[in-house]
Length: 133
Image (cartoon, rainbow, N blue to C red; front, side, top):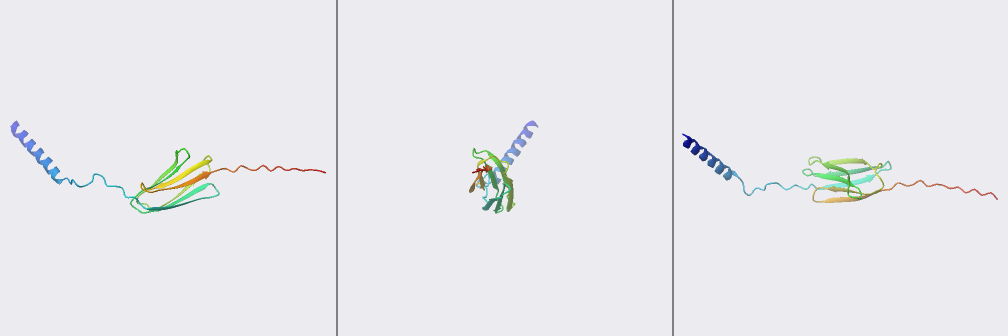
């Protein structure tokens, strides 16, 4: 009886393995390459210390917005979902220290970078000279 059960178990196992191997598609890639979404971007600053970034993109791919400082440290990162065609981002940069920053917008294939310089204007001290003759 044990021999019959073992023989049936081996037969079913070999049949199952043979069936799954026959159903496998050898030419199918393991992972699909990402589709890079084409995008357009624009940005401007306001006098209140805000940075406005507008991104219009195709659906089907993600786009990432990054703000990095001069040492390469990320200050801000936002990913725009693949099904979202537009994004409007408003960053308050008035609290950041003075220096050079870089805004990069990428879809994984193309990257657009813009330089951003923050500098606080020092108030000018007005000296007044009064002379009496």
